Length: 570
Image (cartoon, rainbow, N blue to C red):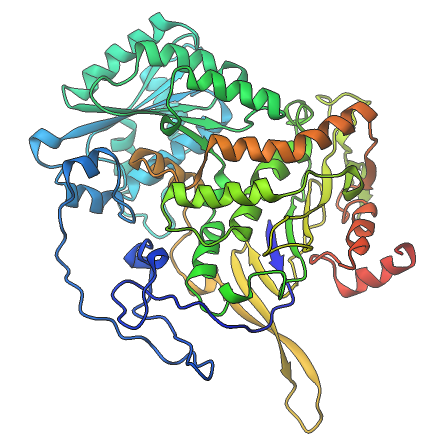
């Protein structure tokens, strides 16, 4: 997935600096964890740009001031790791000692086996889980504790940069894993789970996290039964909900209403793992803590913004699930739209969760509903390349032969506010595409090969005045030796800590669906036929017509490919 913006020039910079910097101060930067801020930030001179001038900081006391009990209970400790949190709060004191019980509903499913349990082990291996924790798998399948541990153990791996005591750590982790068989809508089965949880909690303050790795049509059944029979009586209870969050505005609103019959909004953690991708998280840091970017982040200097999601494989057996949603619901309405909101939002009052969400909602509500004329859809067909045959979407035996579900979509969106008026935000997402890296001006490559690079003009050495373009490149693999954590690690840890910044609030969800629901209904009512494109290609030609409509070329299109398309474009 890539995000790019082009046509940057200079302008007056906003004065931003870290906490304690005498000449300048910023409420926003004071919210950043100290570990991510440099000792000083370059300051612009009143006459010239001078990026070598560093603002000196006044001495800062290293003593930690213990928070009040109310702050601890409300989870108002921002920017601390779980280990720092425990040290500050003093959880080794008997009267404050607590435990976390994590129950994974749908424990026998692929997501639990391949993602959730391995992520929980990664957190344990890194020392990020609390001292006292228990993990329960819950599903309808009959299974013993030993069988669950065998199932989970086959999926566990250790960090590339930390392999010491790997087998020992795995054994210790698996000893904390248990299983309970039950129906998802059975209060009695959940009461039995509650009894087992209490045995492991051993009278400590009990905090409980329920992960719903199950189909959305049984979310409410589980939440209803768990809230009545298995919620914590002396600690917090939180629920992680996996997407999809409905198929349109109506179904999404119905799901939210159903959940809120039994939970408060601050107990619901709607997970979108793209928000926890390292480069997506870094987007706010890049923009708000680097003087060169913030004053340029507007329609005056940015001609267009592109968000590109490209997969070089098809549905591969997931066609039955995918056919109910399609690429627009699966990728654009959530992953790409959330990144767009972070990119385009105004400077929040702070980096607290609610302040960030408030700004994101303002962006979404300022956007014009999508028009069919600004959307192109496609579906991949079979293709043979170098003697290898690749199947088409409808060749999947789980997909109806006459399916009109798009596996590709491109769209032009617009934000109706002073900062972004008239700037096209181009989205493109597709399966079975030929992947190629983005080559625009400012590139934030989310995955794979995470990187941030800026293309600048420069003179080629010599007597002639010839220009070339070069990259100012931050390639994460070269700059940082530490392995980048999986996005789910951060999200699970945040849910345990009660940090909601990377989770989706209900009004965000409503605003997002309002943008796409009219389009989706019109497409389905008119039975719009997707344009076919060969497996492994660049996608439908119509996507290039859409970009050309706004005098733009896609950032993942090479110069030679652009030339070959010119005869077909207006």
